[in-house]
Length: 89
Image 1 (tube, rainbow, N blue to C red):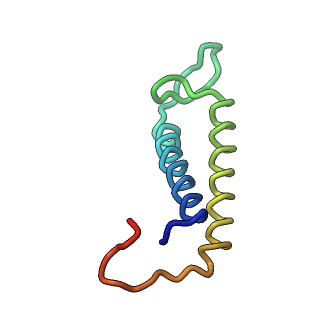
Image 2 (cartoon, rainbow, N blue to C red; image 1 turned 135 degrees about the vertical axis):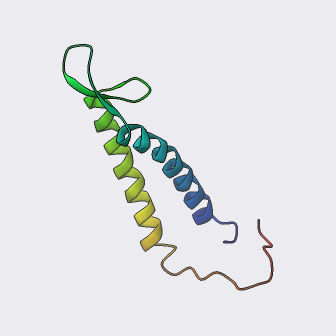
């Protein structure tokens, strides 16, 4: 993809997605435990509180919205040039 504002936006969204994969894995692979106040919680690299899950869900949704906007926006009409090498990397 040639250098452009859209390419920069896509790269930034991809980096956020990559960070969110780690958070998703921490939640998904969390083990049941009892939190400091006696409630059922998950533990990953520490106790995962309800607020942590809500924050993660909000971040997942925001990233999804951003990637969908790119997919159905600038990427919908983007056609990569066919060449033997990458001239813009």
